[in-house]
Length: 379
Image (tube, rainbow, N blue to C red; front, side, top):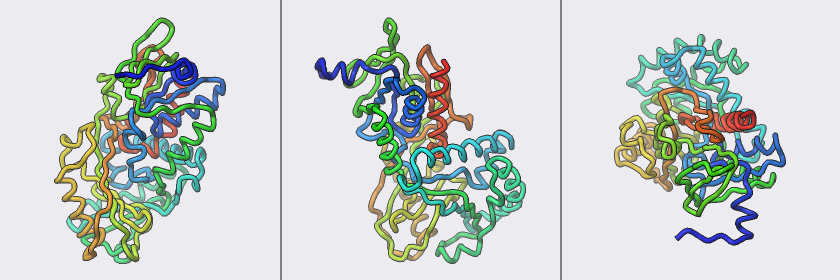
């Protein structure tokens, strides 16, 4: 049974929003911050379906990255050099905006650099990437203003203790952060500006009602003048016409590993696998490419195929010959599409969306949120 709200609840919580933002992840809260900074008197309410942000904002791996060499080549092949570099510049600017908004200390941001690994049976792929480093460095310098972004770092492979790795490319400009602390810092900013975030409130429909929009939710009906949809992978549940395909990412964290040598972030297989050191544990995720159809889901959970592959890589590549135990498993739901850019647009009168970050929400989220807020304010 849906609750019956008191007069106090109605006037202080329910019926007071000029703008309702659906989704309390990085995009939604960034949009809320921008709206309040631009128009301090605007009454902004954020509704979240989960106990915590439901998609990937508190479930990602905490990588502050803008792309490995193989990923850049893949994007160029899908689109063009110009489009690929525009995306790099966007992600780089988004990361800088995130740091400006929250501060490095508030989210444990460290720029330890990123590494791309190539397995022993990927020598041809590695050689192709290595040959294109010079050209990519020139393109990326124009995009983000940093020289010599990628460099071969094969000499570090033995120091890290990897198994079955033949080549490695290093990027000193990528970083890492603590996802939970990032979202706590962002929530604190939102609260400090007088905005509310209400959890366990799933939206089932949005309909025009006189001069307002009526939001039907699991907790009852809400009213708003305007609405921003910032639910990323879950957007198509409300608006199926939006081209957003869910993609589940499965992640593990080991128990503490004595004398762990890893520092920075690590990717392999065109970014489909990724790992890092967190509190002297290995955080390791990926494997969506093993079965794309199985991972096109809104359901959290794990599959045996991905779990087995992650464990195999963990014991044969990342920590070969070491006895290591897994302490945590979880999954997050990302939003993907055929186009490489996010969807930021008006979808109905007074209803806007900012979705489809293509697995790069940490890098893009701050700017995507600001962009949809600006679109709404100008509309």
